[in-house]
Length: 383
Image (tube, rainbow, N blue to C red; front, side):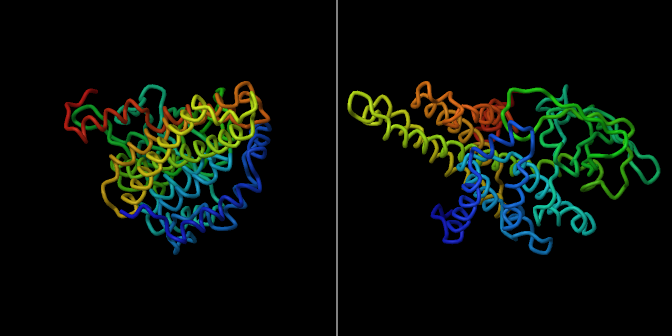
């Protein structure tokens, strides 16, 4: 697996960094405080084809892979503009539609992701299911040539700016009591669907929502993949989600270390830059080591995914490493700045809750360790 980036990858990084740099962290803070989506940045990226870089060319995308989308996500975050919808819209929805959509579904819904004009949300999490997707209680029942959807989803990101929901629901029962699940494509303004914002401490343009489905009618052609094949369909989107979460954390870590290194070179106390003291330099150097380990594992996971090889282990490891590295590097950058680290002017502390969220979601580090213990080490399942 080559770890040296190609000229094309370097050019992609430079192009995305240039666009994101024109907006910068100040733009990200402004739209966040205004409660607005980052529409201008999203459109600028779409105009250059970067939002659909992983969508097949025949559906108006770039025809490349998740590796290239991860580069886009990392560079945005490294410019202080982490866009969480990249995890879900081109990351999850783009992968699921590409792999499981019918020709008609791809033509209708994948093209929008290819051009970057569309934005979709992913609704799997429920109040009582947690990490146990088999325990999903949202149900869809057949009614002639339609499905009728009832249930509740929670902590669904970015619904306010989405046109379509990718929803997982229980459609039948297995003999062991677990549900057979299916995936549906639901319009955000479908009759019978209500949404309620969740107040959080997050400082990000994307909002969190609880969704209520009350006899929402879904046309039969909106079933994605086969009936009862929902776990198989959805799981194809989980590795991309983990990889994109890792890329975002890697970018935030880079952003934080760059700011901290510059400040440690410029800030002089007792006649010398504070970066000349090992008590300041060593934590930042250690963070750099962890960051590069996380970036390497993220690269490996994306390459494996794009090659069609098993990528679960690498994707989970990349997400854990990157989330920990992002949180640690950001914390060390804040510490390097002292009291200034908490100032809005220095643009660090407002990113804390994003990296903290990504240690919990899209999969908690505890569940990642469970996965590694069971699947990588062959230890007994602990849950």
